[in-house]
Image (cartoon, rainbow, N blue to C red; front, side):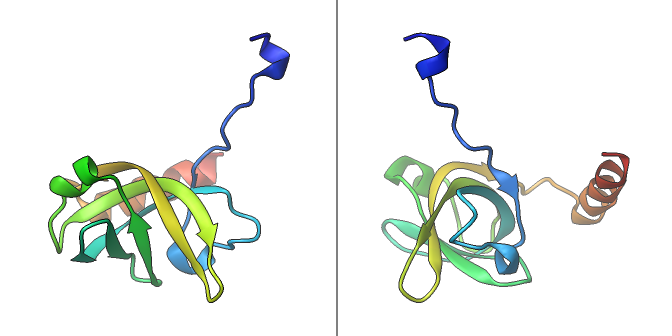
Length: 111
């Protein structure tokens, strides 16, 4: 396929859950704590809100409740709000949240 016919995926923009707009946001990445888990989804809370993220069976196997995770996914509008179709899930169990926030601030001010 020629390069001009190839479509690039929209980047997964870092977002707080409360700031996700299902009308404008296509792909996002969120960091939060898994509040609950069922057979095809997890509910994630990042301190600003919570959202249901649908994941494939393999990704769900490695996730436990109360785990800290980063989810990359597609925003899917619903009649009342939105949900996330998860594409990538990363465990952040070893992450120091205070250090992460400090680095994030430094990086965002230098861009």
